[in-house]
Length: 226
Length: 372
Image (tube, one colour):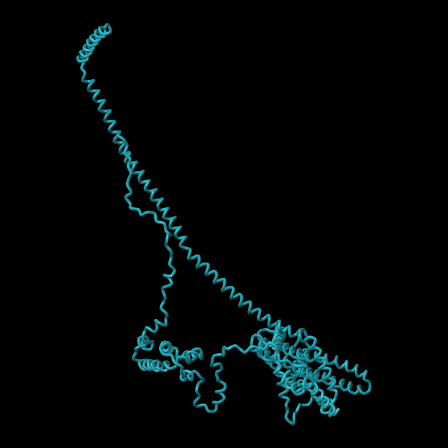
């Protein structure tokens, strides 16, 4: 208990040198690029997974939207791998930092919006007004739709940050509770430990789901605007 | 007067009926002995100075240009003589090189075949690189990097080294086997384990590793991970192997299908070749048939001709016979008529009296005779 609860969320430094860039780059070495027809098991399974996910995720887009395939796939891989690696003990998860998530969400969202305005100006502007609104409500509704549009990137970023951070915090807390209860009442500590295991399973799922949700929403915004 | 039979002799000299296929065989070798001239031989036969597209445009206005272009192949020809083997791989390189030295390459082909020797062809290689920048010092480095041409050489066609069958052996999923082998001579089998235990206890007791909340999360995560790997690791490995097997099986199937197709084509070709060898039997039979038919037709016609001619000649003969008979009859009738006419009445009376007298005489003789 030397450190506070939020110590694991500070930017990692090693002897005064920020190594956060290395940590962000690290997951990329876990995805070897297959340079032959028959690869090792890791590359084969990854290839299969990426094919599966890309097929499902890009089936709703037209040709213009499918040019974003590389972007969306690398997004889901990055977020998924960083989230999963963050569950290891004493590791730093870059996606817990709002700065990074905003840095991912705002450019992607802005890209889709600008693309929509460039190619389908009338349709993009028409998104601001849902069909069938009564006439006196139109100005208010336009304002509300604008706000909801501009809140999209913020929502994307904050959703991801909050989920991952909350999960990590919960793990810490329950782990701390187990630690403290070990001395007082080992049985309760065991129960708490079981809760911790269940939570870990949940966190594993959340890690993957959050990646999926992020990418899915970006693709949804894309679909609206292509 | 018999009828004449005519046997018209065979006027046409017909050759005897010839049976093909006795002792004759087609010689397929005769067709194979015709070897076409290879284009290289044809090209090398023509001297280089005779055929040059540049020399065939003698216009005064373009005399200078043609002179230059004449000089260029002439200049490049001694260059090409030195550079045969190096220019062969560079033929497949950048398109600008190919386009620029296309005409010279024709000369180069001929001169290549004349002289072979290994040496570097620096002139043609450097001609195909990035465009040279002379007066753009500010933009130089950036543009140079931006216009760098990749893939100048040919890609390495050598196969990648094969993947090892199994990964390196590890114990406890983390520590490679070589470490245990490394410690084995000094500390035996239990050495690395004792080392590990000692290190862990050391870190714990000296609080170099502090037991915090994170310890429990570590235990839970790593425990979960180990459980999942132990339970589903093998099946995931098999799944990956199955994916690769499917890929290989698909390609293998394509390969086998291609081989089978080619084998079938070879067999068909062989059987057709065999058929072609035996084709002369068919031709002989056909020839025989046709010859027989011709002979038959000839004989038939001959017979018809014979018959027709005989008919006509018979007609003439019968006409002659009939004429003769008619003449005979006519003559007889005429003679009889005239004889009868010539018998006058008096003569008739005398003849009759004479006959009666003769008769009486005879009667007397006859009467006299039987008495004897």
